[in-house]
Image (cartoon, rainbow, N blue to C red; front, side, top):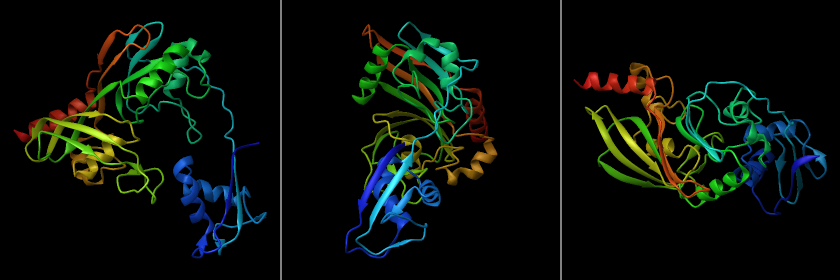
Length: 316
């Protein structure tokens, strides 16, 4: 049994192309399959050309028939794990937690470590009854090394409504970020499409023809000489790595960002930042069941406060 099967008829008139390159261009954007994963599938015989096994270097000359079989990932039982969670709010329908940095939100085929979902199953056993076996309770995400406010659904009714509210952009999210450099304006918007990089499938970029609309609103909170700044950032859309990609593209990379913050390496080392200095400080929304207006704030964590203090002292 396979998770997905793709059939491709290679056009008769195409430039000579390697099969791995052809498949990446055809399916990786929609299925988020990396070049390395495609290479693995070729090596294991899950990809055929004219019903014959192929190699990564197989050249397509036009007219071939390609079949790509992608095996379903192995099913892994989600075992509750006791972790100390910072619960900001909870009722019978939902909870809001302050996610610590370093904790992945939910399991994936590429990780075997304990995730927030494992801890949620221990703290809120009822979420095991939701119609989402792989990510029970999860209605939105934060990157592993981003801390802050995260909404958790505890009932199926709340889960479906929250998913709808996120899709309609009815939930306001505000982040606190420490960045290298100082923006030219105290308030500005970044409106650039974001899509997966064709050079590195684990990264996102604004330089793509297949990007999705992404809108980020930025306000300067504090300036540390001309070296760094503290920002308040609101994301209107919720694209993968949106804040980090948009700010890096503006020449304002997040301090400590190992993926998009190459320009911050020296400053990251000086400040002692051990992860990206990004925190989901506030989340505001109407309760999905009662309609009550809710707003929650997660205290800025100590590591970000320490970096901010270092920058402020250097300014003096």
